[in-house]
Length: 356
Figure 1: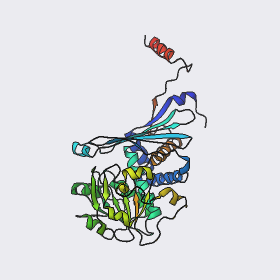
Figure 2 (figure 1 turned 180 degrees about the vertical axis):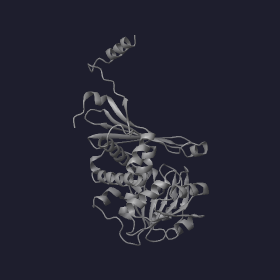
Figure 3 (figure 1 turned 60 degrees about the horizontal axis):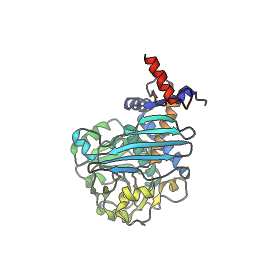
Figure 4 (figure 1 turned 120 degrees about the vertical axis):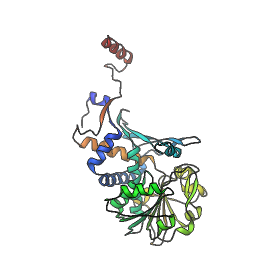
């Protein structure tokens, strides 16, 4: 595909409105399935990527992070915050945007909102891990925490893993009512539960997705029976966990990138040398996943840059494949392009002349 010099100057920008249009045009569950497939594709080429723990700036009220990576051809990063106190102020707990660039030129090729896209890719990642780690035939999931992520998680597990029943619990009953109402007509059987113990009753999969920035005990050891798969996605920064440490000691633990998860995940509670397994190695067949129907598997997910790279790559592919003019992006004039590359000041003078 030949890209003209003029096209290099204009970068596709996917706004929040455009992202919603794109997702609804394609269908939420199709996007979740496609994102999971794209992430799996990139996990299969894991060694090609630059990898580093995300760069975090912590404050008393939250965290702001950059998550960069490259596969040698494209470079991507995500800016993301996590501010639990925002909810009480009527603001989003998590917001994000991301960029893809061409390694060959250094020019950006996509700028996108990633608040909605992160929710989609997080759900797709959760379900992808469960596809490899949960017991075959798992049909019931408990969802502890019914905030902004919950509906995406439920739909992803339905579309990718075949889950048919979701049991909901949140310390705020209004959040549970919201989630249950949003999932009406989804094809899922939804049960609103009064306690976490009620929610996990009979569950094959337990997803914990709470937002408080603290060491919490959402699940205690006696709540987790043999054969369960735990999808722990709420703990994602130092000092924020959801599971009692005894659960970890009984579980086969799978992570994205150990140097990051040991800082931010549930395993920050354990010794630095406690053994964990990397999910990409399960996907490539290098190591086994679930070893028996009675094993407890734990996906200690904190989110990793390669997943965001995959999500941005998927969006860019869709933009290039779909007809123009459908409102899925707009061109931003981001790259200064003087006629002579060394004459940037001359470009400014010519603009001055045009302005009179």
